[in-house]
Image: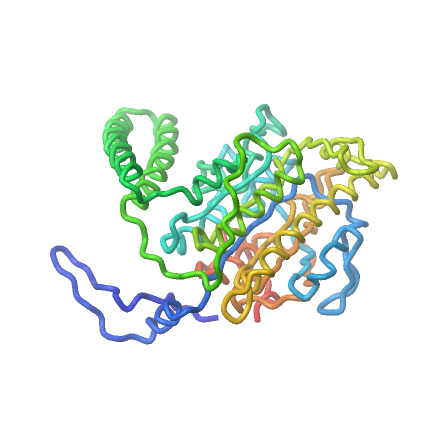
Amino acid sequence: MSRFRPISRRTLLRGIGASLALPSLDMMSASAAGSAGIAPKRICCVFQPNGVFPGAWDVTGAGSDFALSPILSPLSGLKSDINVISGLDNLGIGHVQLTGSFLTGIQIKAKRNGVSLDQQIARINGGKTPLPSIELGTEPPRQGLASGEPIAYANTVSWSSETTRISPEINPQVAFDRLFRNHSGPEALRTAENRRSVLDLVLDDAKALRRRAGKMDQEKLDEYLESVRAVEKRLERTINPPEPEWTPTTEPEMMNRPAAGLPRNKSEHLKIMMDLMVLAFWTDTTRVGTLMTAHGFSRQNFSFLDGVSSDHHGMSHHKNKAELVSEYTRVSTWYIEQFAYLLERMKSIPEGDGNILENSVVMYGSGMKDGNGHVKNNLPIVVAGQGGGVFRTGQHIACKKGTPHSNLLHSLALGMGVEQETFNGVSTGVVDELFV
């Protein structure tokens, strides 16, 4: 892998009151190629709650010679586009911590986590698109405590700082408007300017207050200021939007604006959110996305599926009872059916010499292996897409027993251009078999 970060030919060296143009450099070539028509790389992280039944998930064989399991059978037509990865261990205890560590690799302690994979990538690549990232979901947050942690923490897998989590948007219409409404019209600009003025006042007052506050209050104010700064950055992008770097090579299919409210049908709701994710990538509105197929402590009722009468969390604590194992497996298979729909939609859209799936990497999985006992070893993980030629596919990668899940996060971060020695200080290497 190349270790340099491409720069624009328009890059200037800047000092106080001065700027200096650079000569032509080799490191500018990749940027120039990008403007000539090389498709951008995207990443989507799809989270499924409550784990799976191991006996119905685990594949047989290794390398390219492997057979899909019953749960993964809906991916049979996409076998050459995916990697099934086994042997990765998560950190944490219970639903809340194991959800929180899914994209950070860190166990939540004292209400602190790490910066998640998607947000690390958004910091590097987010300035190239109207939105640095998009976070979508299907279930509202829940309250209460589980294993001493707020259940609300399991509402998301995205963390922009140790203390700041990003709640997913679950309303399709609101998500659509955020992605595609006119951000550059006169009214939008006036609103952004007015809100920025208010934020300037808020920041000044908060900073003055912080100087008089105790340590605990300073931490709370810091978290608040981080949230305000995030809004400030969004407003700045509205007022001074980035110059388009990529023009889609095919005409995006603009879907109709979804109806107000939440769809009552679970399948319909999830597919709408998947369609929005695909459309966001297709239009280059963002290149980074997360999708919570459900809350990390989901008690979703799946009685709409034949042979299922329990809620998802309840059946995940199956105690190896045949009836519950059967329901648990049916629900896990349903989730993979939806995942297959997402991949097929991405693969169906031509782009350059390939398609959007080939130019993306999509990680699917759960923060626990088996809900019965909250097993955190040997996570159920599928990685699809080649990330623009960075990753190889069509394999079962059996990692050495005890390999940290953060090694996969480190690998995906590197593939998306985030150069760092370790991932949040907890990874011990990369998944070598993943790279071309």
